Length: 172
Image (cartoon, rainbow, N blue to C red; front, side):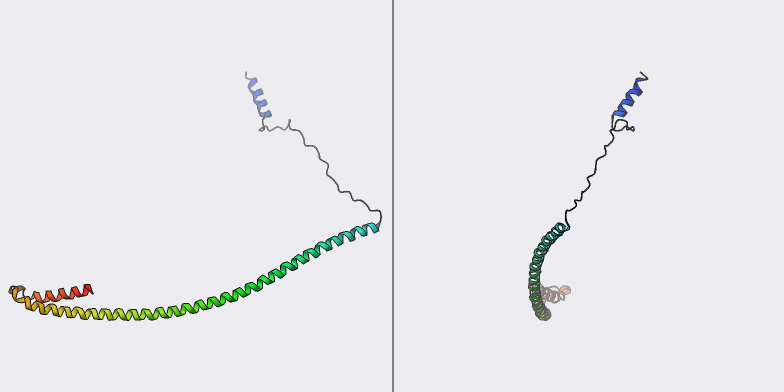
């Protein structure tokens, strides 16, 4: 039994991928690499004709590419001119909008000035109305003062003035 456990353990380790031994792995075979073979031409004239044909085909391709590039360049120039026109139009619109904004701000400032003046005038008139109402309250309090006992009789005109002035101030 004691001899069997190490043998089984050795077989398991060598048969799994965790084995440290490379005994059972096949060695990679060498692959041949292809080499380009240059064929020698029979005559230099044939080589020259072949080169001329290749150059002509390259020239045709270059001419077609040149024509495409010219078309693209003319389109780009047209787009550039259109964009400059649109930029000029946009600048004019921006200037007009700035001018309109300045006019609107001036008008708003003018209306704000009128509003603050009206508010000052309103509060001044409100004070005048409250004073007049207070005076009416004093006069009414003097009329009713005879119905109140003597220690409290002086408070009636003062209370009437305060009451009338407060009512006018609150409701205006």
